Image (cartoon, rainbow, N blue to C red):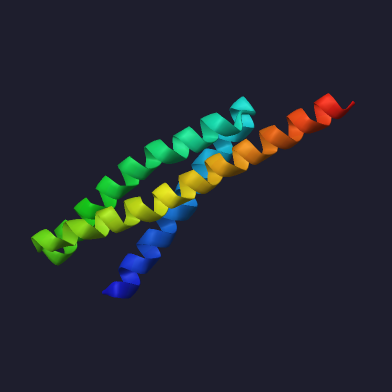
Length: 97
């Protein structure tokens, strides 16, 4: 059963990153993509908790959704930090010229 939830967690993480990447390609804004990843944290955490609740049928299964949300939150923080670093490098290179 834990293998199923690990695969589901990987699916949610990859899905959120793909949606963030697609949104980045449309808008060309890293901050918006990081914000979309943050919003998907809430959505996929709730979906993961609901699926775990339906499969396991135990109230503590809701903590699985919180675990998925935690990993996606870390993912969105990393994306935001990358956006900050890229912006700092671009401004440094622009001011250098």
